[in-house]
Length: 368
Ligand code: SF4
Image: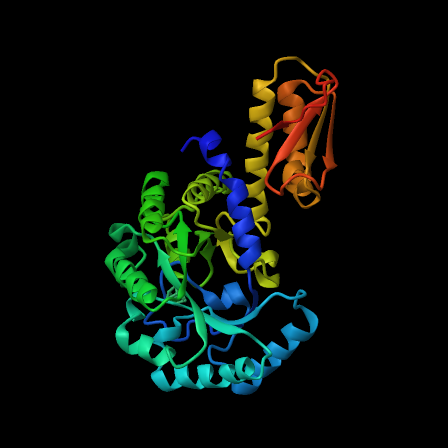
């Protein structure tokens, strides 16, 4: 992947993601409906939720809480059943949860429902069940499109199951999200990029990318303790996810999440034995992209400048700066800049930057 080529797609994707993003009310059902525990997984550790099945009252309480305190103005609201294998639940449990949640759609409190499920659970029988309800989005736990990696992760499905699942969902017009992982046993950059290519061929509506973290009470945790598995370092993972992100951008497929959602338990680190977890993982990826963009401009400048100003949209200031001013310090050092200012400019799109300097007295900004 040539970053210069892919960077121009960055703009298009930011617009597509921000315009269509629903307000999600997550309801976690840790390991509910799972046929077994996949080697990397410990949903109780990730979500901090202990009970795998929720009562109707809890569904209502969560909807109330999110709508009252957290809903941003005018975003459509969607209840999301996450943390398990939704269509692997018993059919009466699926119907009970959907029946109850549908009432909140009927009375106008929320707009639709989504859930995550395993690829092999998506068949005509289950699709008939959910067709009675206002389900608009289905997220599939794909993890990898490499059957060897899937077998090592003891997933119990193949890449072909994902292809079939996406086809069935598309026939019925669902919005489709594909969840993928980076750094599973047997995975490397080449294999992971192969997965991205196979996923792009399926043309999902969005993708999530999760680094493989070693969680306590998981088989991967035991492998790690026995020296059979070593997670990717954070820097390697961020660099590779950046390439994947730019690849998906080139293919006009939004990446709506990179890195695990930060939670109190994860941030305390108690549940993490090792691995590339960072609460600001996605921010780090975006910061590297801004660093690359700024470096590309600096490499192409015709004159040496000691004072440089980089303008970015106000919402992109921290991405341009990087965590703890990492990008600012690196640019100053690499290009011998004495004074580097990052200033807000609302006329710029969120994904662009403009560089000006004292020698650039014509006032023409350099944009990527
Ligand atoms: S990865 Fe998905 S299917 Fe596997 S144990 Fe976790 S929630 Fe269940």
